[in-house]
Length: 120
Image (cartoon, rainbow, N blue to C red; front, side, top):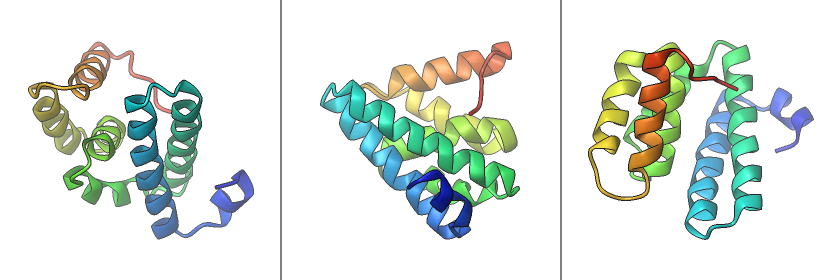
């Protein structure tokens, strides 16, 4: 979604864009395609920034229960900024699982606890 379209998008469209970008991000990481992963990450960040600008980031919280771990992981990390009591348990659960999602969850928690986690 282009920057101009982001600003005109409804909250529901922004949440959908965020979700689709998080899925694409996970697929790109699994395929070791750093360019596609960077593009997907930029889409996630753009949607999140616009939701936050509109004070609507909480509309992402239902995605914490998304079956795609990449979606729930992205939302949980962002939720640390506005709803840590909901984001932290998801990240703790993901950090306890084997697999590729474990490390990003651990690092997000570590940075958040140290106060160094940066949000887009």
